[in-house]
Image (tube, rainbow, N blue to C red):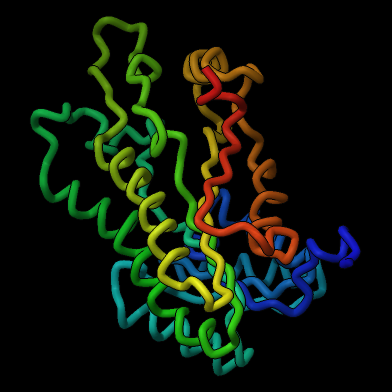
Length: 276
């Protein structure tokens, strides 16, 4: 019987984190390093990826790698995988975290002023390319290494809005002169599709010792306006938004041997949003 605490360790495991320089990507990468793993911080912003990797290495004393990746570009993803294999010789895990989620504090996020009836096709295609096709391409690219090792773990990041429709009331301003805002259709649809991709891959790689699971987080506080925080918190049974580090243990769990009998599943951590 394996020591329970040791089963959560990721000692020496090489794990790619897409969107690794973002708000949650940094958290996941730090958690992997703290658990003994080697995070590959992959991000569209190459400078931020390299900076994040250096910061994590300095903090934990472990190995890291920061690299550019465009998850919509197969050549870019293949280059990342090639670089990782050349440097470390293996790929043990993938956290499919990169995604588009336009923030409401960004006044230039045109998605928020488009109702479903007139939502632009180009915005639909752009979001699907990153949020869904990117996961498909990344999983496809790491598969040969995992198959040859006869072991691997992939964690696809979804959202509560992949389980339930957005409560559009959260995004309305009390100011009657303010423009009506919407959580865009692309976010819900793409995050819902992640669940299907997870189940397909878990079943497809049956017998290959490659586990594929989904992590479904709720909203994370990131300097949101008080009005939004109050509305969002009211909708959760815990009465608050998540702190940015509160998903770290879940990511480590899903990547580690502690979850060795878990595949094709969806781990929901949403503060009770979907409990009622």
